[in-house]
Length: 159
Image (cartoon, rainbow, N blue to C red; front, top):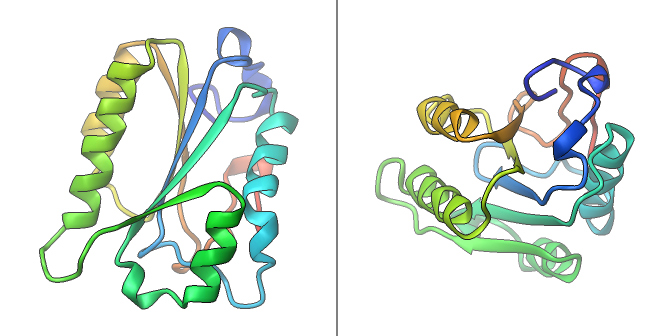
């Protein structure tokens, strides 16, 4: 994961740095049968196993009207910030996510870690620019539109 591809990266200067998780919940939905209250803890545990022990914040973006209120409440109760982006405007969720990601960099000088959970490639230029400014990029792609994700050897799974 990150620049080197796996736990061998030895988080180094990034190990104790803040970790900001950006989740495209529209394109990477919660898998049916997933233990909702465990998602945030599972993400944090996976990061710790890879050597990233800094404070973690998790933000999810999408049209929350399509997410059952019980799922929203469960995610919110674990500290996941749900950001509602109304449907109807092309790429509105990605744009809101991207703007917030860049503001996070302004408020949190490097070193810092970004974990992007998305099936899109729309973020590649912004992530490259952040990497050039000494932010560590941890990128996870969705598996068939659900949050049962893996990356390289790590096999990260949040449900």
